[in-house]
Image (spheres, one colour):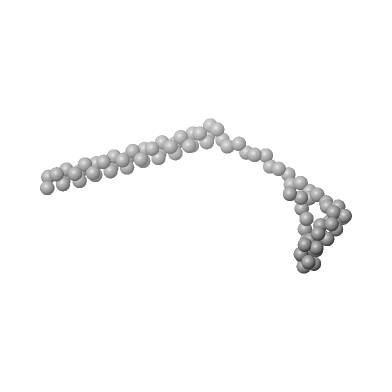
Length: 84
């Protein structure tokens, strides 16, 4: 019975020690994160202006519509064309 009590005591001491060390590591890493964020803030990317949509030539649009109509057997329609 003496060995069982000693084993439980050692287990409890070990678990408390590991828990305490993990708390120290977590707190120190949070402090480090705050310091790094204060010293070197994240760079903000410049905002890009939205470009005006390019106009498709009427002849090109007619060719696209004819191609879609031929491929789909007249069942497909073109509603919007944008450049990628």
